[in-house]
Length: 139
Image 1 (cartoon, rainbow, N blue to C red):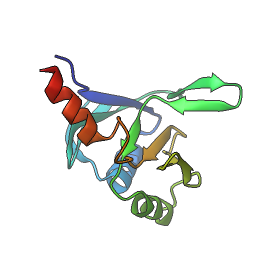
Image 2: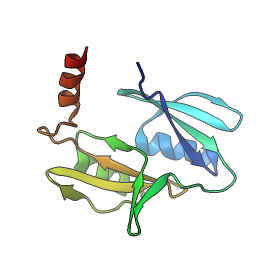
Image 3: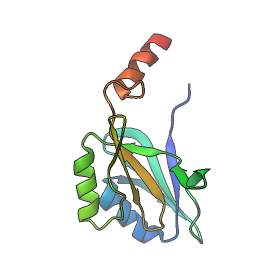
């Protein structure tokens, strides 16, 4: 019944952010409106929108005093390639870490909005093929 339609990200400089997101995430502009712009990803239905704000706003939540978490992450097939591409473009990233076979790193946009990048572990119940199997059984 429900699907994720779009992700909204607050940015303080819409024009610079449009270029940054196009260059670094490979998104394509759908349309713009006063104070915002919408994009699509080349290989996904979820859309991304940048919304002009006056000052940076948090796009993460605190898990514990020493740990924060973003509201969503990006999946990639080749995490090393994504990491190298972002670093070659001067994007601020964390180091790649491994958790139970899954690799992850964080990167930050021009406003410091944090995003995680993860690869999918084939045996995980969260891997897209496993989720599709579960979805097909539910209907």
